[in-house]
Length: 64
Image 1 (cartoon, one colour):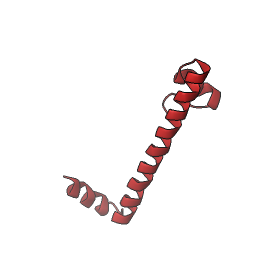
Image 2 (tube, rainbow, N blue to C red):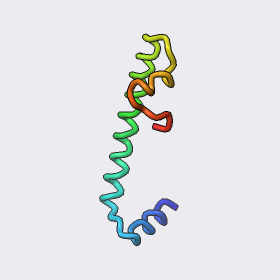
Image 3 (tube, rainbow, N blue to C red):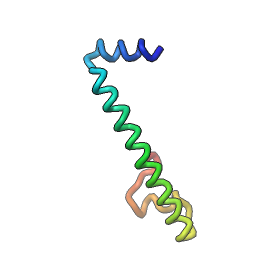
Image 4 (cartoon, one colour):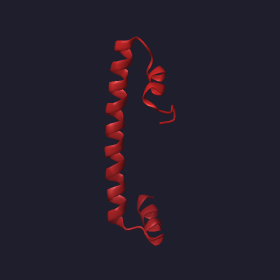
């Protein structure tokens, strides 16, 4: 199934190397986002508020 999807993307003009780079960047993004959520959690705990209440303080959207 995955090979079929990769073949389709290659037919659409993507290179396998680009796909690997994209996947790597997504992993890095997710790791950074996880750390940010952890820090927001600690800050929320310190301030005695919810993480959701901190979002406006940092210009974050709940869908971020």
